Amino acid sequence: MQMVSAAERKHWTVADYMALPDDGKRYEVIDGELFVTPAPIADHQRLVFALGRRLATYLDAAPVGEVLLSPADIEFAADTVVQPDVFVAPLVGGARPRSWKDITGLLLAAEVLSTSTRRVDRTVKRRRYQRAGVAEYWIIDGDARLVERWRAADERPEILSDELVWQPDAAHEPLRIDLPAFFASALDG
Image (tube, rainbow, N blue to C red; front, side, top):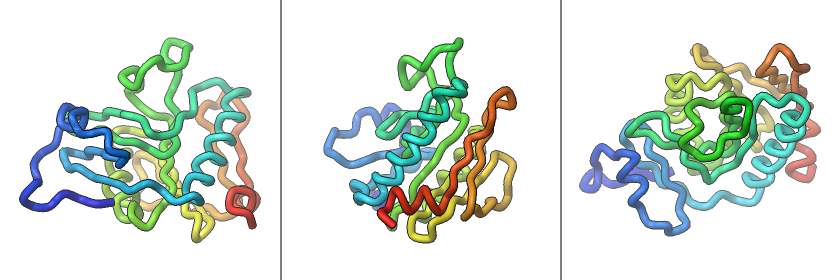
């Protein structure tokens, strides 16, 4: 993830973000700081798709929200717009959100680590998701084949390498993901 030079630095707003060119790059503004990310590699996208598919299947049986994938414009403040790789937005009045503006909170945000995003995903974005009250934030590390799970009040992550259990609503059975099988399937071994 790249930051702008000191000469270009300013306090960015969502309005500034919306005026950026559609040039194929992925932009995010977090607490007024602009971040630019190159296109992800294939394994990153495989993990995003595999996680999205698992969450979608689960949410069909436990309809508490909708899973979506980036690109997306999730605004947490006038100076913060993020694009989580995978996220679950709560239902709005019992229905799926109709626009990004309808999404005012997240049940889950997940970022798949890349070389260019590793530091920002683990620090800047994690802290921002926690401050926004995101119930769970998962950092998916395909190289290490593990998930770092953060909750809003956590000071340290829970490191998961065997099984990931997610239960956004006590009325439904939890989602259980066998992590070795998940990574093997998504990454061909």
